[in-house]
Length: 204
Image (cartoon, rainbow, N blue to C red; front, side, top):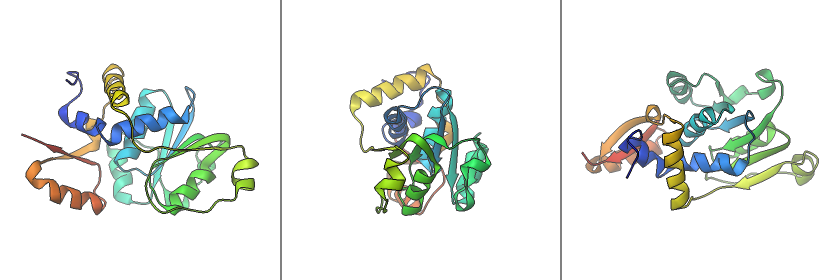
C-alpha cells in the first residue's frame, strides 16, 4: 500500500530507478550540505537530483543531450550543464564531495573521476563498457573511494517509499509518460532511443 502522497506512477518509479538513486546517495555516505555531481540527466540522474534536494545537498548534473538539459531545467533543476565542456571549478569553488555516475559510458566515468575532490567518493550506477584508470594518480594519490551499485532490496525500496512521503520528494515531474500495458513495447523502444524523462507502465 502506497502512502496517499505517493502516486501510482511515483510508486512504479520507486520500484526501479528512483530507489536506485536513493541507494546510490546512501552508499556515497555524503554528509549533510555536501556537494553531489551527477553524471547523466536521465531518469536515474534526475531522481538523484530530486533526492539530493530533499536531503539538503548541493547538487549539479551534466548531460550531453540538449533535450535532457532543457527538460531538467523545466522541472526545476537549473544547475545542469553540457558535459562536453564541463569543468566543475568554473561553477563551484571546489570539486564534488560525491559523484554519482549514471551514464554508463566511458566518457561519463572519466568525468566522474575528474569531478570528485581528494578524499571524495564516486558511485558507479550506469551499466556499460569499462574504462581504464591508473591507480596511482587516479586513486592512491587522491585517496578516492570507488563504489559500485546494482540492485536494491525490497526493504530498502519500502524505506525509500516512506522517505519519499515524509520528505515530500516530488518524483512525478520526472515522469513524462504513463503507458498502458499494450503500449509497453513502444515505450521500451522510446526509452532505448533516448526518450526524455521517465516512462512507467500503468493499468488504467
